[in-house]
Image (tube, rainbow, N blue to C red; front, side):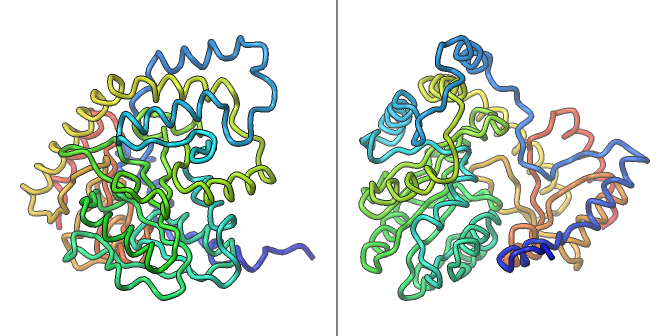
Length: 380
C-alpha cells in the first residue's frame, strides 16, 4: 500500500479549509475583495518582458542552463549587490541562482543540516522555513516575534549547538525591519555559537523609510547568507527566479544539492532577470511609491476605525490586531461571510500569529477602495 511519508504528515492537514469554503460561498453573493495573498497585481515592466522575448531568439535558449546560474546572471547579481549594499561578492563562489527564493529556503536545510541538528525559524513567519527544516530531518525551534520587542527575536533564545538560524527582514507578516545594531549582534552571535545565519530578504526593496540593512552589509560574509527574490520588487512571482549570496561554503553546499535536484533556470528568464537587476534604480522606485500610497490609505482608514496596527516600515503588508475577542481564523472567516473581505489569519504564519490578521496590498486600487468601505461598515 502506498502512503504518505511520515515527514509529510504534519503538513497534510489544511487548517483553513473553512475559510476557503467561506470565500467560495461569498463569491456567489458578492464581489470578493482579496487582501489575503501577497501576489503583486502590478505588471512586470515591458523592458523585462522584452529581454525574455529577445532571449528566446538566441541559439542556446532551449539548452540546459548552468546549474548554478549563467555566469552573466551571477555577475549581474553581484553587481546589483555591490551597487545596492556596497558588498563585493565573487560571482563564482558567493552567488547562486535559485528557482525562486522559496526553492532555496526549502532546500538549504538539506544542504547544511544533519538529521537531529537544531535549526531556528521565526514565529510568526513564512511556513517554508519550518517545513524545510523538518524535511531535512532537523529539529525545528521557533524564535518568537513579540510586539513588545518590535517583532525582533531574542537572540538569547537560540539554543546551544544550533546549526542554522533563519531570519526574515523586512518581515513577512509583521512589516518590520531590523536595525543595523540587530544585524551586528546576530552576526557576532553566529560567530560565537558557530551557526549559519540566513536572512530571507525577499522584501528588501519594498521599504518606505531608510534602506534596510542585512547581515552581509555589516560584514557577516563569513557566517551568513542572504536569499533574494525578484518576485516582489519586479512583480515576477510566476517567473521563479532569485539568488542566494554570501558564505562560499554554504553556497557550495547548496549548489551541490541543486545539481542533484534541478536543472537550473531557463536561460531567457535569466536574461530578463539581468535586465531587472541592472536597472533596479529606475524600475523599483515607482513600485515603492504605489505600495507606500496603498499602505497609507489602508492604515489611515483602519486606524480611524479603531484598529490597532503594527507600524508598516516595509513590505506590502499590514499586520493588524484582531479588534474583537475572536480567534484570528474565526475573525477572518466572519469578514468573508459578512462583507466579502479576505484577510490572512495570523495563525497561517504560525501560532505566534494568533490574535492578528494580515492585509496584503497587492490588489487594484478600485478593490482597495471597495474593501475599505466595506470594513467601515463592519459591526465589530
